[in-house]
Image 1 (spheres, rainbow, N blue to C red):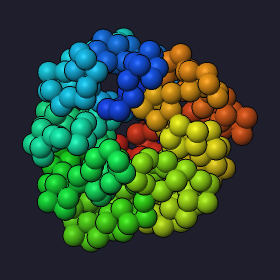
Image 2 (spheres, helix red, strand yellow):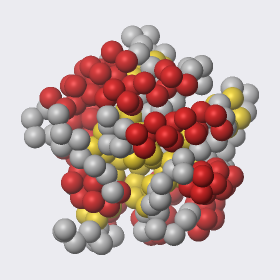
Image 3 (tube, rainbow, N blue to C red):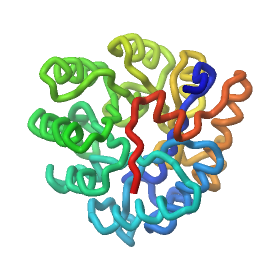
Image 4 (cartoon, one colour):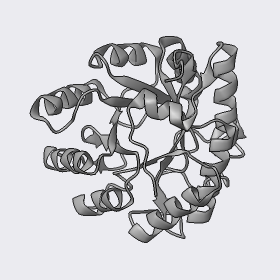
Length: 282
């Protein structure tokens, strides 16, 4: 095993389900565009790509064929060994089976596990009730997919501790702290430190801040020893009023930030070691 103490994992969250081309024309919609962005992010230093899919009009989708085409296109790039992380959310309007089926069929190395329900203020309710979380946890275990446990507030961490005791989740877990979402904890360094200190011993973790919190949370995460998530799902800008040109541009900035701190981006195989992932061979 290589020396990993100075390596940090970068995840590129490529499009999510909320940002649109009206907000930033670089947001990818089609399987071809999402796969190209994934490949370019891998070239730039990302070890993991977090995948949502969109309908042609940009609305979120759980269409299995869109997921399959996107994943197939990513895996078809020569020498690209990037780890694939497929969302289990996609949209608040989808049913349990719609959210789980693509994961069980495509067998990514990771899948998101949103550890509680979130009131998106004046938008809607992002439903993740106990019945779904238990079903998803067991389905990921059966498929040997590592949950990326997304945390938007402190109560979600306590949910996961309960589910570990119940066997729905297996330690050591990997957590993705997301700060600045509507209805979640705000993107302050104080909140990041608080949540990081609640994580069960032995866990791995990464963090990201939404929009204006992107850079402060990234810098604090580096200082606290965490891993990074960047991408157009979370942040559409390179600077105040300046739109990012691509996901890869955001990855390149994260790599520069790591190197300013005498750190290096982990390769996909190093990320597999750090997060305890099973590499899928197809």
